[in-house]
Length: 74
Image (cartoon, rainbow, N blue to C red; front, side, top):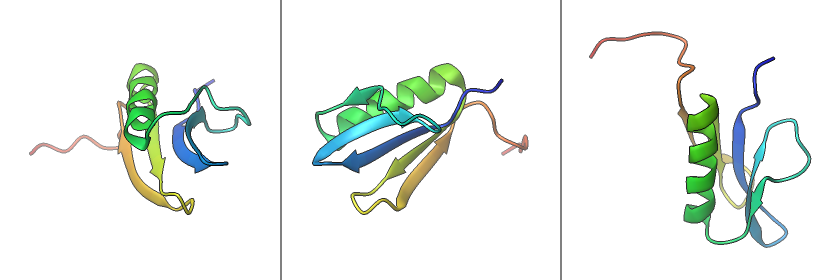
């Protein structure tokens, strides 16, 4: 079974990171940059996508670590 992608998001006045499909954050607190680093490390380790959300909940950025659907030279 594939591991879920990672979300870094803002909730209840706190930046958090969690695996999609989970109701609990695996990391919370600190700045947005600190949570992005936590989420990025988890996404790289698990080779999944990392979604970085804005305070309003919309996706601000996303990065893929190891599961790109196509291999493009360039």
